[in-house]
Length: 129
Image (cartoon, rainbow, N blue to C red; front, side, top):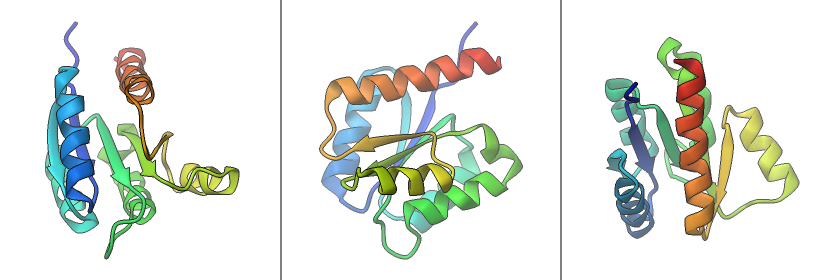
């Protein structure tokens, strides 16, 4: 069975967004990149990817607000959401998970942490198929 592997990466720091997108692409995923929460919401509503990696601190529409919106959409309930953040304390993590995220990828992220997020996304797809 072939699994669709569409990913949206959103971060207002273009260098981080572009680097993360390149790395995810190197693992065989099809990636769309955007640089703010409003753009991400439009792209996600158009594409409904299997995975979205969202920066928490984007202006206008932050990652948690976006995650809550995604989870209210029928198509958004099955997307694996990953918070991209430099705030990784226990309270921060609990807040992000309560907003609808499945996982947290801390900044700076390493290849192993990114690989674990991608593996979890692929495994989640296999279980739901």
